[in-house]
Image (cartoon, one colour):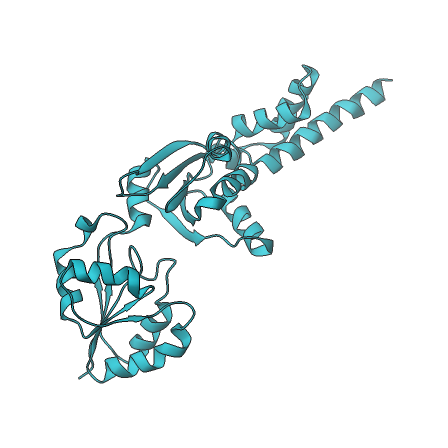
Length: 287
């Protein structure tokens, strides 16, 4: 008979979050598959597990998967863990799960800690519907497309980000989605220096531009407000004309339009420029 592949969620910081069931599985399987065996060995020692641990990560998963499936098909029980949280969520494992399922191997989830869900429920943003983006591409067309998609998303989005890139990502999100969009940065969840900072994209981008960020980070973005979808371009241009006529700079006009109509910075600048152009054309006709 085929063995079983267990997908075991591990703590994201606090060892007390490991479930009793997870500890039992980690003690009873034939082997544990880990991203980093040295990291996971500490957890295995904590629960009294003496089973062998083998590396399974993005650099060897293609090569290692066939052999692991053969072991499962022969009756072995294997547990897959990530360094922290739930396997497969921005972590290796999808290839093995697909291959095991195709081979008819039973696959059993052992739920537990997840930075994604912990950040979502503590954020204060709407959690009835959300999209998980994992880590955005660092640059290029794929990143631009993701930012454009996020700017139009009508529900909560959840991202993972490396500490050194948090400030830049928040600045890019503010430019794409509008500085007034609600957002949350959750850092070091379940650990000693846990921090959940709420605000607008503009406020958070300004704060983290001058802050040293450490630890694991989750960024959450509120959905595009309904008013932004319903904004009448002509009404926005009319407001821009009024602000320009009052002496406001193009930058101030764009910022006001973004805040009042829930527009992205790019859309706000475009409509602000069009509003200013309308004034110039009217003055030319009068002359």
